Structure formats: structure tokens, C-alpha cells
Image 1 (cartoon, rainbow, N blue to C red):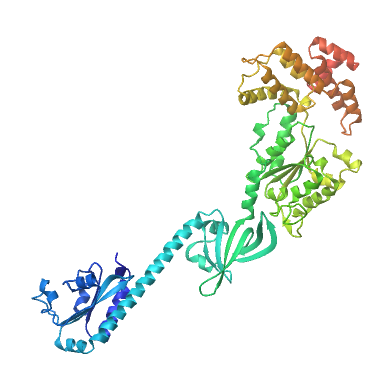
Image 2 (cartoon, rainbow, N blue to C red; image 1 turned 30 degrees about the vertical axis):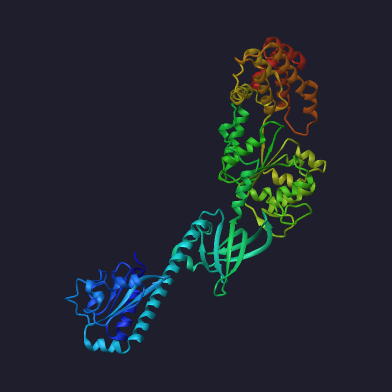
Length: 591
């Protein structure tokens, strides 16, 4: 499409202006000699090719041309319409754009009277026509500039839409002038004409995080916490604008969560390997409590899988798609634990990152925070944790702004918290805040029917990862596993299976020396010989029934001396009861 064709309506207006002022017919042709505008007898032939060769000459010479006697002019000698031409005068002026002729304005007279009138003021009329050509050229320039701007804006739009941050352009009154797709999506703004009616209130909070400023923003009665950069700019008309490059705070949280080594794994109840009655009851409890928001306190010996239980609760809950953030309160130095939990703002303390940091509580917002080894939490932090549990708010170190939280807290410990309370090492009010739903994970020795099941599962799992054959488990190896008390619980069981896999031959067979090594390893690990077990039952602050105490002693004796006839006779002798009584107790406790 020619340049004049693009502004055809404007060209037609100019043709009418010339015709009205000079009282003659006017036609304007483009570089293809197509009539773009015409008046008088030419008005019916718009968008058709112009006849004659005068316009061709104007394009070639880049000069105006006046034919006072068209039929007699030498230029007309070659014209095929010479004999039928009715023109008495023709005045043609080029239209320039960037030193190139892009069209011709033709003034045509068909009567001697009109001819005399134009000749009388020929120079004035020619200058006027050339000036109109300049106006048309100016309009082409405006069009080209506008198209170029649109093209640049289109390119810029593609760039900012592929930019991984939200981009917003607003005026001094908060009116949104432009936004990329990410910003529209994040702020729930409709694109198109509706954008012009949107206003946003952006307020700096005078805090920094990740090296960027924190802002609160409100649009359509929705409030957002955003981090980013607000850039003031001044337009050509001295108007002030702002470019806002930002991310929703949750975007950065998700990045931190993805980098967090404690990020949730997909652990479900079905992934907890067990068939014992105790574990079945525990799973049933988990199903009941998973959908609630109440705080959970998981207790159990080291290595029983307390974090596994916490993850199962999370993945069975309505928060399953939200973060699961775990932190080991005993693995982080006291002076760092506070900042790990609550985060801090820029310049909060000496040595603090200039970017600030999000704490684990904020990372866990809308999800679950798992506080492992809660019994190791320093006393001064227990007060702050109590406030979180009561008010569901935190304050970053170095800030005075309250941050609301929607989290579920799951804590775990292998210690007797009530004993710590008595010793003044754990707050009593915090204990009761945590112990809303108590869950006790049974030790492996208390669910003997799970030992071989778990061992076989681990045998399959680690043989694949080590690229070796599965261990051939014979009766002798089974007896070793069943007789051991497993003080290290599942973790110790894992180590034993991995040890055997590394020592087995290519077919998974275990030689006699390795069997003896396993026995020695397990014996050195064992903390539960008769005297220690009795002492534990007597001195442990855990209150258990006499029946439970009796059951544990009998179970321990059977594991040590065996459950065959000879072993049972020894058990009865060691326990100081008759063999018949022992059989009756075994039946009673389903041992």
C-alpha cells in the first residue's frame, strides 16, 4: 500500500480544500499513478489509474510542471489522449517525503475563463499547491512516526511480556497506562479498554527484602505485598510517570521454598510401610486430624520417622499444595535460629545480608511448618513461638511491622517435654499450646511384625540404588533381625540393610563372617539389656501401666532368648514366672 493510500481520507480533504479555494478540478495521484483523490469529473474515478504522461514527468524530474496549452505542449506529443483531450490548462506539483516524490497534485482547467484566472495568479497558486503538498507530506510523516511508535511499542510489549518480572506504567495519579501480561495476571486486571479505568495505590514500606524495596499496593479493593523497584520518569510534556518493576512476595517465597533443602516430598500414608496394629491405629489418627488446623505434637524415639509422619499429615490435608517447611531446632546455633525462623530486614543486625531474608514461618505461610527437635529450642525463643501460636503473627528482626500468618504448626521431639518443664528448660504454657493433638510414634521394637516387612522394603530400595542384587534373607538372618531391640529404630534398620548389601556377593548371599559382624554391630548398638530396660521402665518419667511394663519386659526377653521352646523356658526362668504363666501372658499380649 502506498503512503498516500494510507492517509487517503486526509488527501481527499486537501483536494477539496484546493478545489474550493482555486475553483478548479483537482486530482492527486500516488507513486503508482493511482488517483487517490479527485474533485469534479475526477471524483467518480477514485482508485483508478490516471491517464496521460505529465505526472510521470513530475516523478522523473522532481519538479512542478505547467501546461498552458496541453495539446500543443511537446510533452503531450507522446500522449495517446492528445486528440481527445479537453484540458485548457494543467498545473502539476510533486509531493515530497524524505527527498522522494510520493505523489502529484494536479490542478486542471477545462474552460478558458478558469485558465485565465489561474494564469493571472499562477505563481501564487503554484506555491499554494506546493504548500499543500508539504502538508500532505507532514501528514505522511505523522503517520509513519505513529506507525513506527506502534511498531516500537509492539516490540517493547513483546520484550516486557517475556520479561520475568511484572511491569506496570502509571501516571502521577496512579492511573494504569500500560502493563505486561504478568502484571495483569498478578493484580487480576482486565486488559484492553478496561485498563484505562484502573487505578493503583502504591505505597513504599521503607523496608527491603532480597535487595529490593517492599511496597503495599491496593487495586479494586485487593491488597498486595510486593517487592521491586519504582522508577520515576518524565515525559516529553514534563508529565511525571512511574515504571514499577515488581514481583508478588509469594513469587520470591516460592523461589526460596524451591531452594530450601527441607522442601516437602510427596509422602502419603500409603508410603509408610507397616502392618502392625499400633501403626494402623496411628494412620487412622492421622486421617482424622489431617483435615483440621490444630497444632500437632509428635513424640517418639530417634529414628522412628517423626518427620515422615508430619509430611503424611501435610499431604493428606487441605494444605497439601502449599509449602511444607521443616527446620531442625537442634541443628542450628542459638544465635542464628531466631533469624532462620522469623527472618530479618536489611540492616537488622551486624553481619546481616543487605538483601534481608525471609524466615521459615513466612515461607510456610498457607502451609505447614515442621519444628523438629522442639525440645532443643532456646528458652528465649520459646516466648516468641508461643506468640506465633497464640496470635498467628510474626515480626521480622529489625522491623516493627506485624505479618499475619495462616499456618499449621507440627512439632516433634524425642525428649520428655514434661520432664523439661519440671527442670525449667521448657515453658509449660508452650507445651500445652503444642500438645493440642499428641501423636506417639511407636518404637520399632514395639511393632515387631513390621521389622521384616520394613527390612524387605529397604532391601529392594537400596539394592536398586546401589546396583546390586537383593540380599538373600534366610532364617538365620531373619532371627538376627527379629532378636535385636533396634534402639536406633528404622534408621538403624536402614544402616544394617545397607551394610549387608555392600558386603554381599554378586548373588546377594551373605557369608558367615559378615553375619557375625552384623551381630557384633547390633550388639554394640543395643542399649536395652535387661538391667537398662528395667531401669528405663522404673525411672522414665513416661507414665505407663503395669500391664504395659510387663508386656515390654516379656517382649524384650523373647527377643533376647528366642521364641522357640528352649528360649521360652529361659525367658520364664529369667522373669521369675512359670512356663504356663509365660504362655498365658504371650497369648494375652499377642506377642
